[in-house]
Length: 303
Length: 291
Image (cartoon, rainbow over all chains, first blue to last red):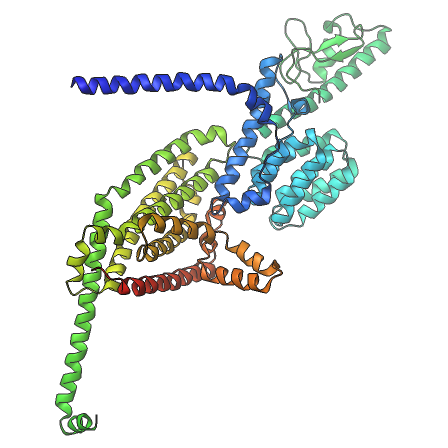
């Protein structure tokens, strides 16, 4: 009995010592891991596929989760050292140099794995849209019947404001069996009014509709807020211009234009009468009451 | 010969009786052979269970539970795919380890414990003995694979909080994994028929790895400048088991099932290859001197 108690104590104390030692070693190694964290992957995509034997699917999952952890880790690190949250448009400042390679290896290991293509289409254009296009073109070659990849590629070209190319890609994807009917409509829209807000709204709507990724859906919600806010600011700007034309001066407070704002179906704050943006934050009067702007606390993205 | 023909002509009834009794005794002898082989198989299975081989199922279940609970947060909506990849890869890996490490000890243990002498002193052929051992381990692996397959299906249903079509679509891939394990077991048995367990395990592990590099052997054969190298690589390509014929895990994770023809061809390939390996093992084992 006493012997058992001694052995159990030895195990517990031993584990505690091992844990402490691990922490000490980790603390010493921290600088090294930072130094090597950004080193390019030693194993190229084809080699990784060859070495993974029958476990290439699992290896692809591993690289996929590593991609997510890589971006997530950078975001957490950024938010810990800076104030505020980071959006898709701020990703360029994160130095995500390893991400293209991680996604390439993941898709080379499992070319039918759609999530990395989709993720690449959303994130890579912020870093290098050519790499995003290369990834999606590889996906197209490996999955000739995956019309969603054409949608994502069209999105990349649309972001680059290459509307004609986007139209071509949508038209090509629309011909595939199983493609949604709106693919053809998107092609026409890209050709006719690629830069319009209506096109942007439709683009984001289809992205949310076709993606199971919660991150993308959240991005779409923010972009929809941005587009709604742009519409609202146009309406408010027009009301403020009308007021200036009629009275020869800019407004001193929102209360002076409450009626036209209600007529324009804008949501107003009860206390001040200020119009509220889609994130629930009141707009601000700028340029001495001649124009409208976003509050610094708003959650509506600028880009 | 002539005399016997003559006898047959003079007494056709007695000739019929003789051939009938020979057919009966032949079929009863085949029946006894099968019974004896199955008895060895049953014992090999019992021995594997006694050696706690099936305990690996516990580890597998823990792996799946951990995967099902934690992967949701790490995989951004790809839980089902990762559960299939993780589950079927673990199934292949665990199965390969069992096939290799238990397979190489099947014959060796009997020799070391000297129980082989007692077995072979009975009317049991060496080929029967090997076949029985092989079938016993295959049965262990079958149960292992079936339980793991059910575990993966249940994990898929759990992560989807409802029915997931993948739960049934993964089964052809699971059977292909089992066929691959049957080949690996036969390879282990072949090596253990003439070599030590350590060396047999090492060689079988090499065959498992090279078996998944078959396409590289073929491309080496096609691109090599030397005629001798071409012959060597082509020979190795056809001689070594092409285990990529049984790799359907990645496709299964996307809900793609192998077609009936590739599946049937894989089964025929497995049967033919296992037949060759068991015949070779019997040939070597029959020549071994246990004095």
